[in-house]
Image (cartoon, rainbow, N blue to C red; front, side, top):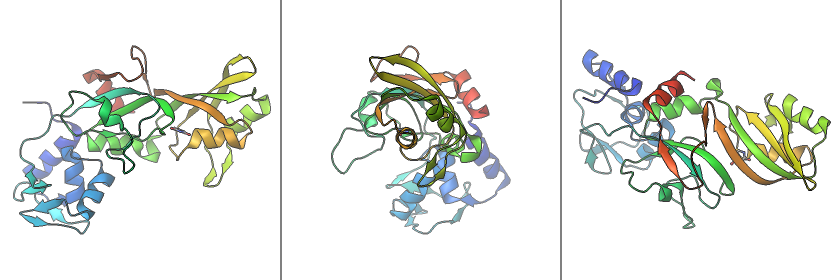
Length: 255
Ligand code: URA
């Protein structure tokens, strides 16, 4: 039998205790989607309990008694949990589907049959490290603001940021959605009047790095995420992905 993830241990314990759990939590623990995406699936009428579509949030189910299905497919055997690290090229969006028909990061995952979801997002025009998984509980933990997982970016900017600009990046920059948390910032290289800034943040606001650098006077020309916690792009070329090792997954859970 496959080792149970903490999420599935959680469901298993509930099952053994005959306890009820919220439908969206069950779906996330089952690896169907992150909790937020599971809520969207419920709201969209894609989830049924005992054959009846459930559209309201917060419905409690008994995993031992109730039969849950998604898009008409009963959740019977547990899907294998997958943890993939992708070197995302620019020109792909981080979503499962795009209304404008642009390529998505899922197009890069040849041979992966499970439905995996990006943990956070990189912009269409950002390249670099992207984690994808169907472990909803881990996704939820990694994205939760209280966990503050560090993300490191290399940003190419026009001009060479002054010491004062770097200090502002470190101390916090006032953006329209508030002051950014303290960050690490240093000049990584300077060439032909252009600089590369290495910036490490632990927040995950929309287009945060681009907005921070623009706010201190150095708009980003190219952006790449090079690390997420202890994970790096080592050994991968743009467009390639690899499976995380069991040890890496265990370490991620402890972050
Ligand atoms: N910050 C950005 O501005 N863009 C990204 O893709 C990631 C972080």
